[in-house]
Length: 315
Image 1 (cartoon, one colour):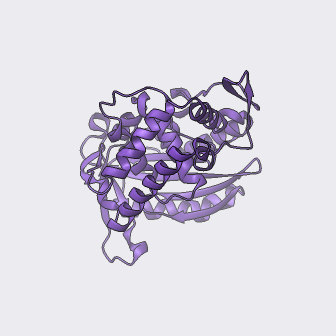
Image 2 (tube, one colour):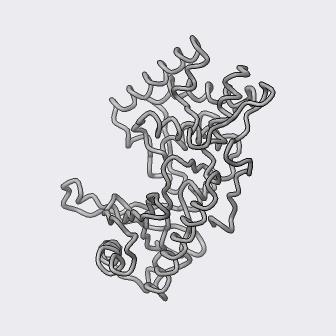
Image 3 (cartoon, helix red, strand yellow):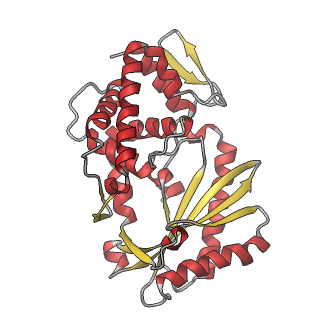
């Protein structure tokens, strides 16, 4: 165990706590709430309860880049075909919603979501609207089909993807052993321009820590996961908990797996040579710096308030 590395990682997590700027988070929640209420009115009678999803609901959000997700489950009996739902939502935001909300800066047709970018309190908020259509009985099983916008890449045929958002959330939300390490890897990704998708990070960290019996400190778990990625990324099978037929690891090309393995190897070697190199891979958020007290613990300079994520805010 490295006392220095653990103290630094503790500071990293505290400085990236999304609650450090309470006023901004309140403004973001209010914007998301307004979009959610407008959706409920627009599609009244066609949709089930709109879900807050993504990293906030999973308790793995960090304050580098703010994005939120709303999953909109449409009834198979009341709604149109899935592709039409997707296209109608895009048109709704790109025309009607732009006129009523001048803070909406951009509307993007993404792979499974309509991406909205708002200007809120001097900061950008990315809010993804993910439309889904129930497969059998959504209220009983939570299964949805998502429209996959493959035509962006020149494909002529539209496709769908089965998913279960609640299962994906529970896979991480109930895993306290993995959540902090997932946050650290997301910080590394954002600060070092890592190309690995957040969903892949979530699944491989959970996989690496299955049955973990090592030391419980942050550095020991982080080192264990880095070692696992180095040795297993080329062959590991990562399965979407919301759809066991969706093998997420297959989304990575061989060259990407090789690159991730090599990057993990270099990081491990560098971190073993010089413990302070951890500051480069996992930097503190300088907007909310930590200060050292008694050379044994870091505290947040801007806020000592703990993470306040809860079901009322994000459920």
